[in-house]
Image (cartoon, rainbow, N blue to C red; front, side):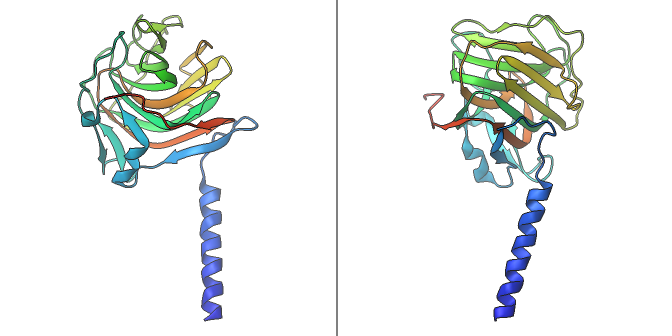
Length: 237
């Protein structure tokens, strides 16, 4: 009996070390940053961590990158006071300032210039937040970093020379905000596809979605050097 008990301890210890050893993290994680949230969406209850602009537009899916995922499968019936994205899934329990957010995303809509997926951060409420818009073809309203601040969304970068290729495959995406510096990486984690500076909004909530398309998300990881455990209702019904 004692021998069996000791073998179990060794087994679980080895498993624990394997999990830690395999824990993916950015190679250039800044000092003081810790993993504060991780979600692989392996079961349906996992999506309860998020609050949606429209519950009916989101669902758990077995078709994630590996195992389950979360899916934006139809347009949200969500009215915005100012021109801004309609489809939002927000981690509504944690407010962060500086952050690194990594996740896998798959765009499932048709191909056109504004075919997009979005990342949200600094979210104060439905009329004050930042978002990155990753789209096929840049123009004044696409493929940029935007702020919504009690007025229609407004970009604060020059129009980039090229957009991103969503194709039909899963893509790895990274959002990094440290102080006023904002960078967005798409597949290549060394060279940002969008980069700028802005610091009008303070710590806020983070999330993902699309302006008005559909897509899937998996393997969400969030690092920060400070976090406020502050659950909130972001979309009062």
